Image (tube, rainbow, N blue to C red):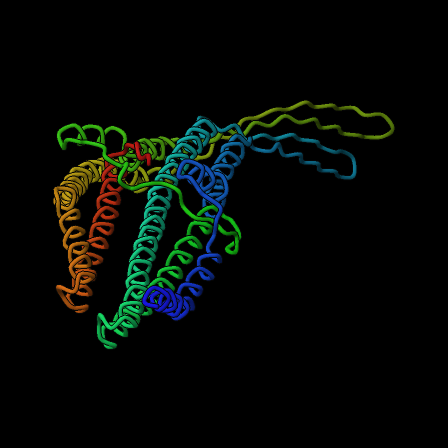
Length: 415
């Protein structure tokens, strides 16, 4: 009879807890199932991000402006007629060095646009990577909360049986059920956070928001090592904004050359034909030609040239300032990375394992009747908090690594 009573009690306990388990299984079935690896994600960001595709048009516009700068002055045809004669003249303005200066300026500006596009992509890549890391964090937090819920649900099953057998009080059995339902609500909330993170990934990839994806990867595989002394010279050489600052100096120099070329006088060339009638037969045909030279009194004003020279000095100081800013940015990013790395080591040095051992030991003692349910719940919440802190620290460490590589002008992110 005792054995039969025990079996019936087990069935009652399982039936009591089944609705809670069924709810979470139904919710899990709604989660996205299409895996998205990091390399494929970045490739799609580079190929299909809508804002980046829009920025690419600036390169084509710059190429069109180079073609436009090659235009030459149009010739001018003049025709005059009187009673006994008519005159045809063909004129042309000969620019002296202006066209070459315009072409050179357009080419430098085109190179500057290319560098700006490269800078935009690197910034986009870093932002997209941080979004991917956040999606991984939300995924891992969901797995953690699901595991916590399952453990509490199992404990609730056991408590239902133990209560029927008279081993624990009704209050203990109710407490474990309340805790299981609370953890299930956290699962639902975390599922929404993961879906929101996946929506942002689709936005970066230019995909429809409704397309289901889930990130694949492990942040713990990110473990690159750096030294500040190695990164500083690399950043000064490879950072795109430094290259832009240097190109701005070249652009200012080409603008100065263009300003000087604009001060040169254009030569007006003319060739014409004149025919004069007196009576039935023409008695005079004249072919004429000429050169016109404008008197450039405006060249007395040298304000444009002076402004261009000052712009060169300004660009040189801007480059020096940018180089100093980069040294500061790399140093600060390295200190943040170093601090995050130390925090991760603290968790891996035994804190995670010890917190789990404390929780499992408390559950074991509870099942043996040596402690109460409240101590188990406190141990579980402490364990969950440490686990969440570890995942958030890992994400902060990975994000600090991304920021360090971005500010250093390198890219070796893989996971």
